[in-house]
Image (cartoon, rainbow, N blue to C red; front, side):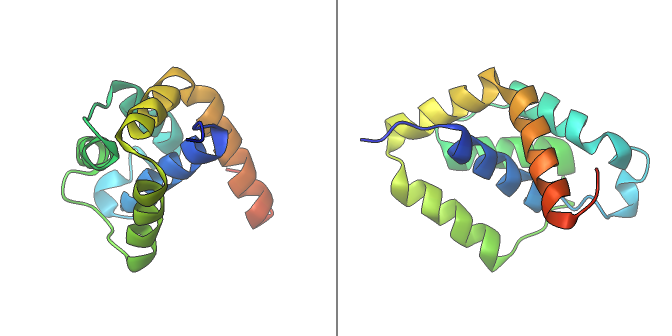
Length: 118
């Protein structure tokens, strides 16, 4: 059984970010603070497993302004297939204990990939 780590944690955060429709006009006022808001909701989130955790965090941020795609579904399935129930709980705890550094690193990686800053 492999241990969860930063890559799993950043993947989980990126999945949640991908599900929130940040482009919706309802988010105009909060878009510039999206990463701070995402981090706070991750720390406050709860769930018995990854699916419940993702659902709760996305619902808390987006309400019904959610984006659903085959790619995000596939990425969730990959995590669920790779991690057993205990590892899912470990990943949730891992993310909650390291949220700010993980979010900052994810933002930096995305900016590097896009050739800009966020």
